[in-house]
Image (cartoon, rainbow, N blue to C red; front, side):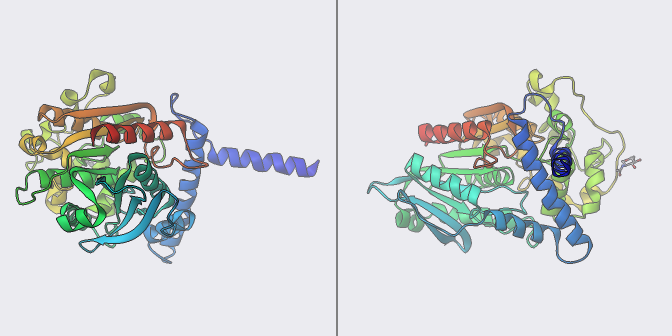
Length: 406
Ligand SMILES: *[C@@H]1O[C@H](CO)[C@@H](O)[C@H](O)[C@H]1NC(C)=O
């Protein structure tokens, strides 16, 4: 009896720890809660270690993640998995074993706030294998350097260097890849890198081989407005909480973490900031760029007066290589045909949807694939026990789009 009571108390305590009120409509809320509880526990443990001075929070977090996740390059019957480098940047390569003809090629950038994860993680490893097998294509997953050891523009430079190397005849010939059928892709911060590289290479005539497609999975594309409708609507939806995204941004940009409240208050983009022109504001004016059904009842959050000097101290906030949504229309117009996956329950939803609109305005053909029950990260957390139906559905649709368009 006492044991049963203790069990019930423990269960209740666990449920209390895991339970989180989620908006109705999220796919399989208990799975998302479990994922969030795991993530929160990791964060708490690493915060404690950081506060005690044992090691940097991100280093420990990455070690914990790789303890759960990392795997050696193991080949399977259909796919050969090896580790390689692209102009010095490590990459994991997934190649179908069968067939002589030239393969299609996808260069992939993993997510994780420019600070976490790796193409070697189980989730990304499984994605790479599945893509290689289902698409009969060569997939290269790039391990760009991570914050806090590397900050912008290091990650961007690694992504660009790896992309140029991928497009070289040496690499394409070595792996038997068709130069006419190449795609750049990535999720979250990896989607940011893929979009930024697509812009840079689209306007660079010195590269003879071009990417045919860009496929962006819930990409992060701007840090000037932390009050888009999706930031407002989803600020308390796991696992990418609104303050966490501001922290990731500041860390990526090599800026002081104490600026997070300033960013979250949109104090860096108040109307008295001379550095932000009307033209810049128009590039992320969601009142014009988002369809009414996404704007809902939300109001713009633009202050008359804010915190002066932030953009002077952190000019990276205006750097288009970090903020692909700020690109000029002509630059966007020279980027490849696009696929943009967005999720309703994601603070980054509107980054993606505004990019869809801006790409279309620039004349780029875009498939906008929106998941009404999706949440940030769902496509990659797609293995047991976190496998969600929306994760599987989105992954299948992403792969199908690649198959039909690449
Ligand atoms: C934002 O700016 C206003 C006006 O200058 C100021 O009163 C407020 O303290 C600032 N908020 C933050 C979080 O810095």
